[in-house]
Length: 434
Ligand code: NDP
Image (tube, helix red, strand yellow):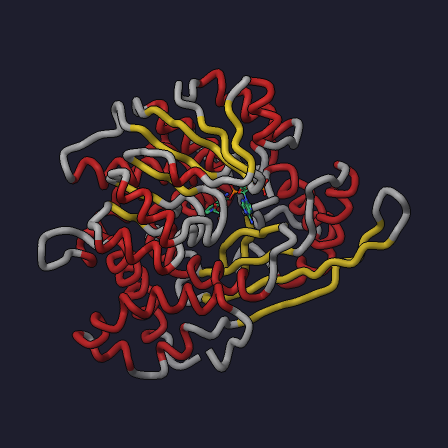
């Protein structure tokens, strides 16, 4: 804590991982040597820079840009860019730290990184968004590259923004290598990448349920958020026969007791992805019930899929979910549950999957995009989807292997943390003290 003052999110993410690692390291003391843990909690490199740009009124705007290059132990830094006013060093350091373990879990050769800016895209014109992205890349471009650091999207950064940044990168570098993933299909993007995080989260939840002899068929599901991850989690949950009853954003929650349909989902995608609107706009168009200022967790469900942002589900929310009989919680977002909430789920033996395991499908498919670009070909949708499912099953297996409790149940928290750590730590030990 002394070395990272004022960085609560970073300390939270490190604490969660360390809780799982202490007993494991007690049994395997080689991982306490060579300053391994001290090195692992210190990002390899942190870049902070000024982004100045001119808005539609001709006024100069100044934002702060960041890239945290956390670990290159198993491959080039890899992780998304977030544009949101809350972005700061603490949030990006926690995301880069989590990303390092998540990327290891995918079994693909990718290190961990994360970046972004405190730029708020809400209310900005398309021209302003483009100029901001271009200004951001005029600095970031010197720090990234196909074998160095490969960014992608995250909150506030979707296909449109990745396109602007990849375009500016190409212009500045005069190279067309794969320096961004999440690109449009017309210029090197992979089929299934937009769907991958949401689909992967549901695939992971399906594996957890199947291990207990259950399926999604007929289960009630709550989803938070309404962005990229939330939309495709809903799509896959519907396809597996679930009844999805909520979506949300930072202003409130839509509760739909009749359940989402593919038609309503198409309406949500239109409002969010093309009109850049809010869930309240969606509610108005579909005459659904919008509840301002509340989160989805008081609604009685069998499965909860938090897909919005960090710390959106606290201890009280977790108690309410458990009281209402929740079976399974799979995180589409990064660290949406507070440490207190995680303890409640684990003590109640809820099937609880931390984001670094259940939302790894996005970065895994980014890894597949990198492979396809390197080979100069593109795989069909079915092939990418089958690989995604295979990777999510592999992560689930690794969690079960490393997270089995004495009573036969599985701590997916311990399983994900230990399995990710072992791969990164072995690579660090093999490469000496660097
Ligand atoms: P989007 O920008 O598409 O959607 C973000 C959603 O979260 C919006 O509904 C947004 O609502 C809500 N949200 C954001 N900040 C807050 C906040 N402070 N309070 C309440 N709600 C908030 O992002 P993604 O869907 O891509 O990302 C969602 C989560 O999934 C993030 O945690 C991200 O790190 C994680 N993730 C994303 C991956 C990807 O491939 N995209 C991969 C792995 C993880 P509002 O519009 O009101 O802000």
